[in-house]
Image 1 (cartoon, helix red, strand yellow):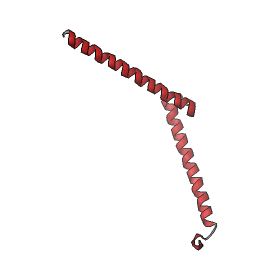
Image 2 (cartoon, one colour; image 1 turned 180 degrees about the vertical axis):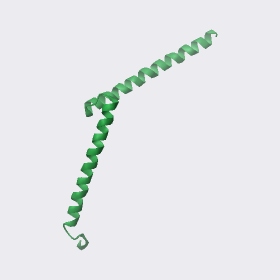
Image 3 (cartoon, helix red, strand yellow; image 1 turned 30 degrees about the horizontal axis):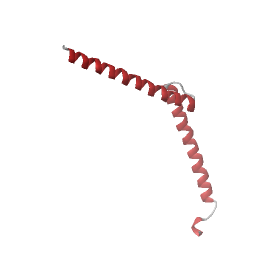
Image 4 (tube, one colour; image 1 turned 180 degrees about the horizontal axis):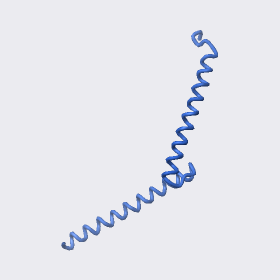
Length: 80
């Protein structure tokens, strides 16, 4: 290995360290959003919260659809 190859490897290592630090920063940023917006501090908690939110959304959609059907049946819309 000569000096040029050594410097190339050293530069690649330095670049990977920078990429690693950036990735960790992004992960911390995402986790901070989870914490502030949803009260979650880990991926597992966020996944549980997602399931909970999807279930809640499904229930609200069903309720909305039921109300819409009731509204639709209140009058004869063909007359309008």
